[in-house]
Amino acid sequence: MEIFIASIWGLIIGSFLNVVIHRLPKAILKDPNANLDCLLWPASTAPCCGHHLSWLENIPVISWVILKGRCKHCNAPISPRYLLVEVLTSASFAWSAWQFDFSLIALIYAIFFSIAICLLFIDLETFLLPDRLTLAMLWLGLLGASLNYLPVTPQDAIFGASLGYVLPWSINRFYLLIRKHDGFGGGDFKLLAALGAWTGWLDIVPVLCGASVIGLLVIGSSAFLKRQNLSMKHAFPFGPFLILSGLSFILIKI
Ligand SMILES: [Zn+2]
Image (cartoon, rainbow, N blue to C red; front, top):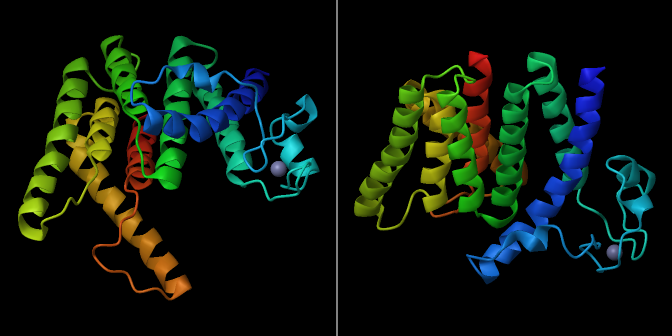
């Protein structure tokens, strides 16, 4: 029963995360210090034509399936990302309740997954990793570790966060010297620092290597399928790979 209730909450929060993924990068690009009222107001509109969504079009998963992934107003396709985010959030909330029942630990993990899902899709769509999300993940990890809710000690979480920042920063300095342009974006340092607070310092190098392997596999196979030539200057978001790799190391420990 708890798992079922958690999965319904996951659907509702997932629907909100779609709003965050859509609106937060736009708000930050306009004004880096924008307040976050824009996430709650105005009411949801369709990204394609701006028409106001009725509650019938706002039911997580069900609306997308009934409308067959198309806008009711202008018939434009609605990104499957909307469906995917709701399903992933629901599954992660169900998992948290299954592992930890209804507890503060489950809540901390549910918030962690929500932030991770937002970061993953925002980086995929806009190449941005907003500080507000990476820093929230970092502080949540440090808080969880200091309360002994996570399988890392507080010292380990602090070392993990520090090394997570310094290591990619140093690699980037080295890369800049040799190739004269950045290898990482600044958001990647903060993201690895945030993940480091959850994994501890020993997992930083494995998380970074894992992300590179996942990245090479995904980009290599998509280039092969599209028969594209990839140059070294081709930019791609690294955040999603860091998140997938970090997540596997975090889940292994539980
Ligand atoms: Zn539309």
